Amino acid sequence: MSITVQETKATSATVIFVPADNNEPYSYGVIAKEEFYNGFIPSDVNDMSSCSKSVYSHTFENLQPETEYVVYAYGVDGNGSYVEGRLESEEFAPLRSRRSRLSG
Image (cartoon, rainbow, N blue to C red; front, side, top):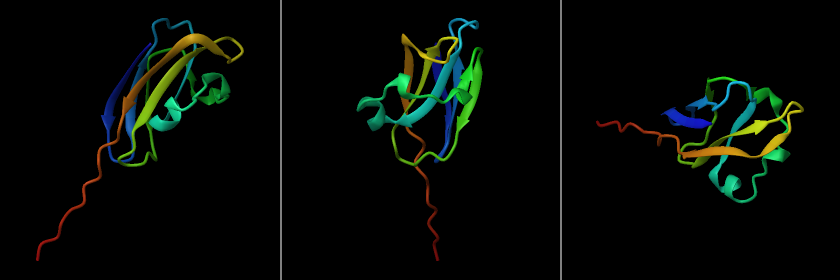
């Protein structure tokens, strides 16, 4: 699995997921970096709405500006359970929001 953060904005990021094998399903998501490194367990995620078998592009919305995130993907079996050892991740941060200055 390869994960590419293609575009980031102040509150969103577009990510491309490319599986090594199009016959093996995977689930994906995004989580704050601090949460990811402080005990993220893929088997605790039961959201199969984010499951695919092929190359997929997804835009994650409503991200917090200036917060570091980890986008992840992991293999799942036919029952939707995490396949041990099949977790890939990539760190990113949305662009800082720019405030315009009014001059007068």
